[in-house]
Image 1: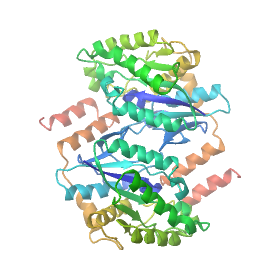
Image 2 (image 1 turned 135 degrees about the vertical axis):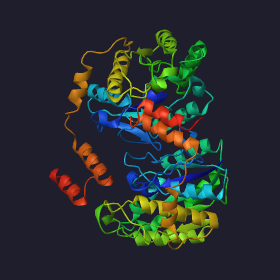
Image 3 (image 1 turned 90 degrees about the vertical axis):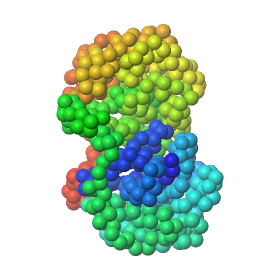
Image 4 (image 1 turned 30 degrees about the vertical axis):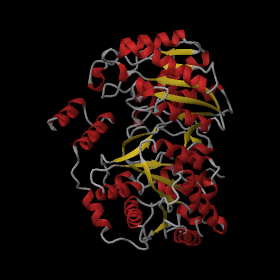
Length: 280
Length: 280
């Protein structure tokens, strides 16, 4: 199995409303829990009670379509509200992410890192010292993982920032984006991922669920083509629409029925008749 | 800060329906996320998408009432469906739990372990080899943590097992309970926690939310009195009812408003007027 590390702040963790998009259930997409893999279900992160849809699910879905029969595992280590200083290489977040990756690597090969962070550094001239901190983090992780060429995808902050709600104070997001782009363009095997046309929840800071599905596709485009993605992709909405009518495998179908029974949405008799319909 | 490790299978992780009980928000109760502490919100575990209410929240609430001004942190490491063999001391679950505890101990003192497990071993004569495995686990954890007297609270399996739904196959739960009780009574500083009168969700295997609130109080009674709890406690329902009308602190109130804004349940203007009401 291949694996991907997810780090950054809330828009990597994901705050898209679960009800706003069709769920992605795919038995070839896994998530790390208690050091082990299980089939992914969103929310993938649990950094906050409000965790929801993030960019990683559509990234992984696109990956599986390019790698039939193979599996990918997602390692959720993003932390809502975290600043670049909290991603100091000696800090808890970095050491914990390295620890999680070490469990993941017992049974997978790490093939990339998705990074989305900067809202918490978009004020008070913090951008002036951001570049070196991000470069240090990238080099440290590659060094610790002994993967000097590990691809790192760096997402652009949303252009809705600086205007309203919790996003109102992020007035220097353009300065942070300039640094993010610069790091992505100068560090080898780093790729920049555009947030063009992506929109926010009513809180003014968190990407909405549909935008995060689109963002994940762009992260995958950057990863798979090994190039910067500087604009929206053709056919993003069509891709998302098409996946919502994907036929479930038996394992995926059973997973969903199990979930419904456990949540009290099905009686045991209803559950058993659903399973019986499969003719297993 | 003090901290408590939570291990076992789904009834320690918690599958009680969130909507069935009043939430517990308490700024003196924390949970470990990405190696750091934050105010607890249920679900405390994220071992499955279906994680819900567990026994730890009412345990912690009762602890804070006995320790005014002090804080407690919960370390969620239970894994749904796990058998005693998956808690082998060389296995991933144990190594991962130890890793999580090491992060927690950077800023807290570990003062106990809550264990609830055995449903997955309640068939096929697995009980015959269960005792030594559980004793080995307890001794191993105390040894690794260098806390030879660390209290370990061991919960009884529910008497609803063996009858219906997913619980139907757990026909040897009484044999497992006999072993659990024996370990609790023979290993020093281990305490048995009764499941008398506790009831299940429609799935027939998971304790319901109200039962888990009651169970947490019993775990705390065993911990605080350092004695076995062999029956229901007086006043469990009254305790739960009383906590549902507890006055929130400012921090707790803000946390809840933040959550509502992030989930789109409040507009930003509504949110701001709620915060303004506090007169901060």
